Image 1: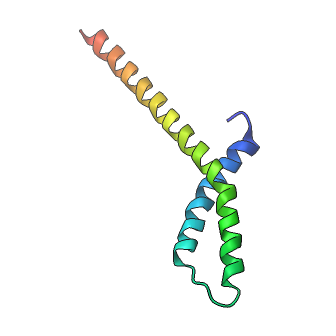
Image 2: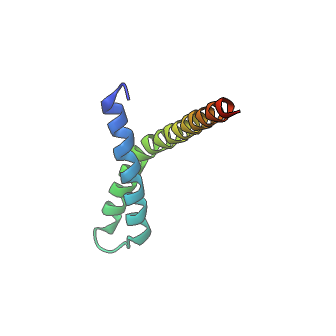
Length: 81
């Protein structure tokens, strides 16, 4: 959270990755379709690194929060005993 532009890139990249994969899955080549698919593929290639980093951050936050909850629950249980 210390570098908002990078965090923004990761968040936007994650969403755009899913949208571009959906579009590529439903795209057909006819007329200027090749240019369209090439453009969407380029956009996907730009977004995948940010999406991957965002997923790594998500897992890290999940592990940190589960550890905090488990520690808190253990402290409450130990005080009751």
